[in-house]
Every structure is written in structure tokens, then in C-alpha cells.
Image (cartoon, rainbow, N blue to C red; front, side, top):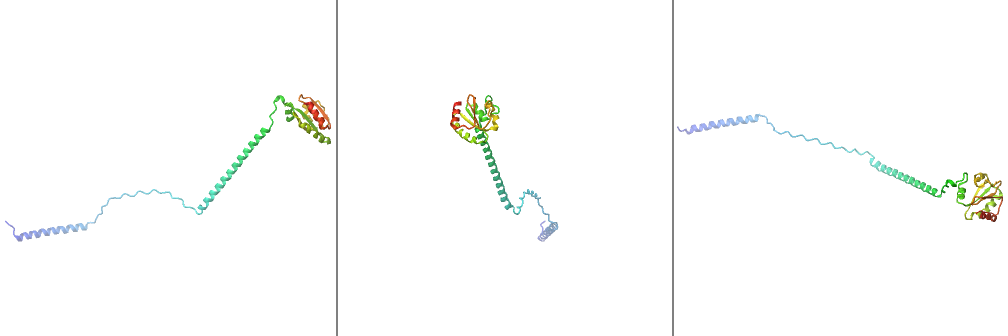
Length: 215
């Protein structure tokens, strides 16, 4: 049975009213519910590593540092100068020791040593030289006799020595048998160790001849 037009219009109007009702009620429920914000939890930022802070510059530090460096340089320079002076002194001492060692006479071998005899005389004796010993006591004749000895000093192979009469005992090894009793006195010891004595003043010519004979 076909539906009449007025009935169809009434049904459509009822459906439209029902749809409107549901639409209005749905919007009311949506507006009455509180909005919920959905968000994902954000990761917390990692704490930054603490950086060491440079110490705050002190007042006057910029002025003190150059002064400290200059003082350190001055102290080092002074130490270097002292070290250089010490090294020069040590080198000088070593050089002086070498010079003394070069000038020092070589020691006599044991078989040529004479007990108590001065070393220069012992060396001349060991070298087979003619020895002239002049003993003085400070009298007037000493100066004249000493002048006469000048001629004997230039003779080859002759060694001349002078000593005080008070030290006569030191030469006893070569003049013990002469019996020296006064000064000035001259003892001439030949290469054969034979000795002769001249007491009192003697002139240069006579003394030179005696020395030449004793050679």
C-alpha cells in the first residue's frame, strides 16, 4: 500500500528531530567533559659537567710576576758567576800544582841519600859535581870572601852553597874531618869526595884555582 505524501513528510520530520536531539546532546557531553592534554613525558636534560673555574686574578699579581721572574734570573746569573769563579779557581790550583811538580827536583835514590845533608848539596854530590861550601858568621871578611866566590860560580861542574857557621853540623857528612873552627871558611869537596879547607879571607884568583884543581 503506497505511503501518502503527508505521512512521508511527517516521518522525515520525526527523523530529523531525533537526529537533531542526538546531535545536541552529544555536543553537550563533549563540552561538559574537561579537556585532557595528552603529552609524552620529555626526558630531563643531563646535568652539565661543572667546569673548573680559573682563580680570580689577585690585585697586583700582574706586577709581582715580572718582578719575581727578574729576581729568579738575577739569582741564577749570580749562581752561574759563582760557579764560574769556583771552576777558574780549581783550574788555577791544578795548574799551580803541575808547575810545582815540574819545578820540584826528583827525589834522590836511596843509595845516594846522605843523612842530614841538605837536599841541594846531596843532589850535587850525587851528580859528581865539585862542591864549594861557604860558611859565614856576619864578620867583615864575609863580604869580601863572598865576592871572591863569584868567580867559582861560573865554573862548569861546580856547585856553590852558602850557610851560617851555626849550621855547620848539617854538613858533617862531607866535612867532618876538616875541623872547621872559624868563619869565614870555605870547604871544597871534589868529585872524589876529598875535601880541603880554606879559612879566613881568600882572593878570587886563588879560590878559582883551588876549585879547578879539585875538579
